[in-house]
Length: 72
Ligand SMILES: [Zn+2]
Image (cartoon, rainbow, N blue to C red; front, side):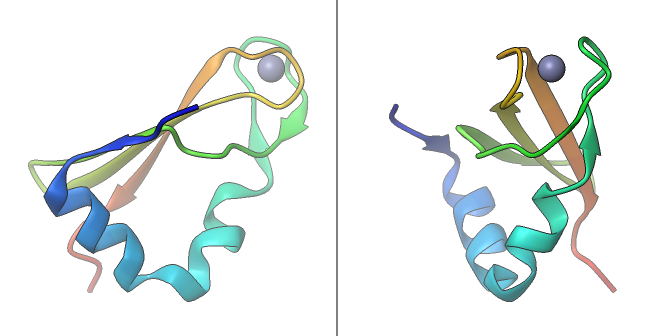
């Protein structure tokens, strides 16, 4: 699957590479309610947030992870 990150999101995400695993684990899927993690397939920076989209490992529903950006 090809990931689609905006240039800004790509830079933001790569700058916190040491935290990536941590940030994407222990998410709760709103659809199947399981603890899951995502591999982001889309990323963008919008109005102070870094938004990452990826499918739930259990049911495939798209989950959005919202991070403050820039982080301070
Ligand atoms: Zn799910």
